[in-house]
Length: 306
Image (cartoon, rainbow, N blue to C red; front, side):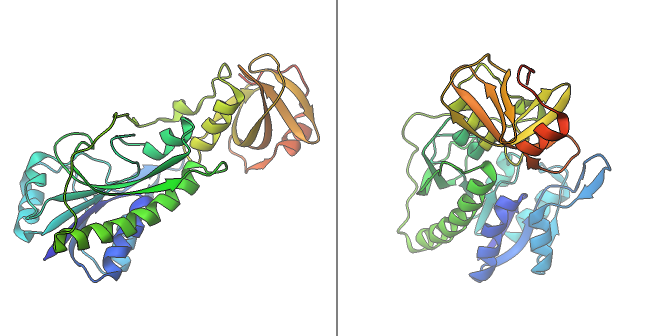
């Protein structure tokens, strides 16, 4: 029987290519519309669309999922499953009811922890030591459906949202394959989610502003969590800079003040401890070592990084 795949970003591509490699009958790939991005307003194509077209699959990018031509087309395909991986929109009841054996979602957390749009970012930001991927049968709630399979993965000390996302995408593709096999063989059974739920709401560009009242350890995790987007940023002499690499060190100083600046980089006071900044990216510039930023801006102690 056939599968319809819903997905949009790079995270979803390994799951799509895994289904293709395993010989699944993919009748349709649904992704979000191309978007205008950046200062030049260039048209950006979803990675899933690119991968699907390269594989010769049919792609559609509906503006709306409710009613109309799209719902009729989806119904006519009579898929066995709909597979959803980071599509970016909530599927309405009419769509959820179409597949003969349900809608399967690949979610980048150990549900019920970190339900919502940004589970990878929030797991790193909150200092988690582990996370994972979950396959679930979708219902009308926000990631509330019954669990099918879960797989745990460690969060390394140097993981960013980008690096962790790539690991979870690979694990998610593998777990999806195991889930489909298990459901067809009857060895995988849906089970209710158990444990305390937490949420991972979507982020916007302003959410990357660093709060220097937090501890240096929390800020270090925040910097890793905000990569590659929206970027943990602050302002030095009115210039917006994104902090790309930093580590918490012992010591004390005024929160948000540069307490040291030399050829090794610069150090900023936090609510507890100090943050040693190692790599930055000034607005509109390429990433650079913090030492180069110190030299180029003639940075000195006493300045504010608020």
